[in-house]
Image 1 (cartoon, rainbow, N blue to C red):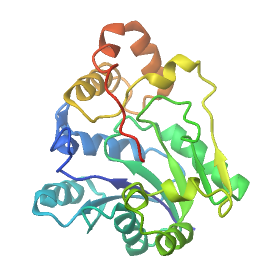
Image 2 (cartoon, rainbow, N blue to C red; image 1 turned 30 degrees about the vertical axis):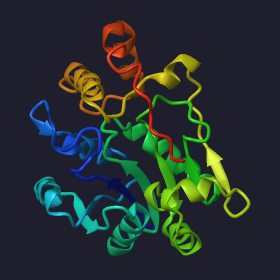
Image 3 (cartoon, rainbow, N blue to C red; image 1 turned 60 degrees about the vertical axis):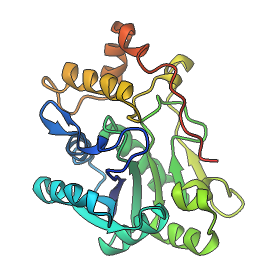
Length: 244
């Protein structure tokens, strides 16, 4: 059974165009994410699902340089893009990651993949409810489940947010949520990249922690941010876009 992380990434982001290739410590943000995912022990590969738009030629070139798979598909139908990427690369299990989450913790990926395997569920994730900081979402499901989802819905929100239909239909799919056990205050920390302010926070985390330990985990991130409340205020007021 082949387990592949599939990263949704494109250059034409609404709030911060080109963010996936913005440099952090001299490397594109997407490269940092791929590097972290390759440290997860439960993954057999990492694939970037981008679009056929010419602006994403640069993403394909980056994937070739760093040794990540690349699939190019629909700009708007992200579900179809991820599904076809999974089919093209022979994935039995998909670990869905978004390109705006470069701080994804490889240990957390392993924890959620292992929970998925042990439970025999259709879907495992850490977003329903979300008890980790924003930007650390990991969602795991079988390619066959996404195939069923693709046949079941043409709703625009479902096609944009790949796993939305799955976790909104517990009558059809068995679901497992992995909670963090962290104090509630950490749930509002923004460790995703949607805006320049977000990028400043995430860059600061990498600059502080990456040189000593490229595989730094969530605990190190939170310890650093607890010492730097000045960083947290940079993006506190930014609203996360709702799926619906």
